Image 1 (cartoon, helix red, strand yellow):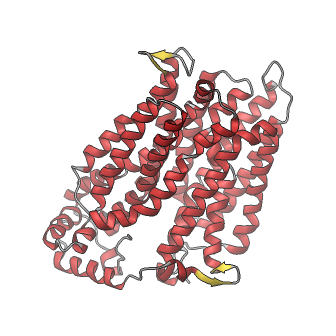
Image 2 (cartoon, one colour):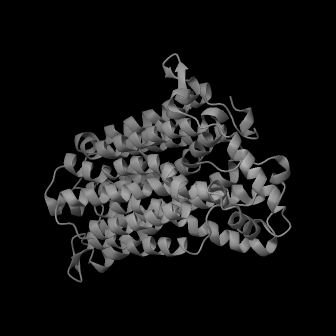
Image 3 (spheres, helix red, strand yellow):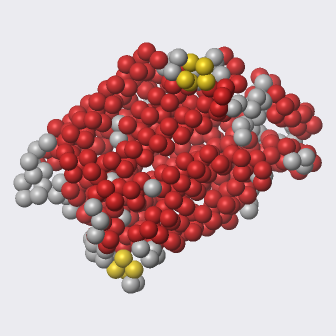
Length: 472
């Protein structure tokens, strides 16, 4: 499932001004999947310690409950493209909406630990679907002249979803008197945190009924008249609709359906370019970024910070994430992908080293000494900022551009799978690692950030300003 390739002539087209507002609405509605992606991924941050207390479990079991959603993510991402090609992009969004809703209700009202884990897998499946269907749909309905800017809606929605989840968690905690297991209306605070996602999940489903199906899917299904109507809605009345339909059909016939075996042939199994994509995906996760979004409240509480303050810091970190993402969106086409990645790696390595130093201090009355506490908080925010303005955005840009056309889809799938696996490894290992040595854990993350610098310098080629057809 890929977006239609465009030639120079079509790239020069712009949406008619009367239609641009409608296109923005369509894009924003589709990007609700990205919002839920971010929201569902990070909302668990507020419930970690409550789940540990409620079910009286150790760090190893807790880590599996938190990380198990990533199994669903991997399955959802792997199957979403085929589902969308069979039944349509809109139906795929509606399925994801239902799964998000079921997951929210089930996670909020679990009978036991095993079914909480099951609901998280279901939510993960929805996240995986949203991570694939949103960008693909937006690319397929966006007028060529606006595709880049409209495509950024998905990433913006993800980071906003992360921030809103932390704000909601903080608000619920205040209503519960600062106790994650405090009751509101007979239900514990952490259950409310997980259950509130019902609201955006239902909204996502309702919005899916208000937006049109992708013209590309309609053409593939033989519904050319409807495809023409939608192309007129999103690109304006001045477009030669018959020519556009023919252009999309030609592009679809030309596409090479890449297969796994097309990726093989290098000295170590995969082609070298595939290993570079895997390396980018893995380094993006091994710096420990998802610790900041899954465990930050727990982390700050473990070094003596009040629960309410820890939730507030989780929210401020997510705001920094938004700021960094905006910076990356502004600079990625001006500065280039590779320089941003190098700046980000350097900044992350320094920030993580400072965090490791701060957490090496002996706790006094269960708290970090004042100086180390300030350094830890500032370094955590700096780390997220440098990640967001670089690797958070740049890796996805690289993965979309760096592979030759004939292997792009399959290579992107392998790289994305590697990313989910690395994400799972970090998420599942952090509680046990932090029990062992919190400072040592951050030294490990700092080492990976440092190692990413020579990796980028030696193996990663700049893709700024190059046509996709030039990659090889």
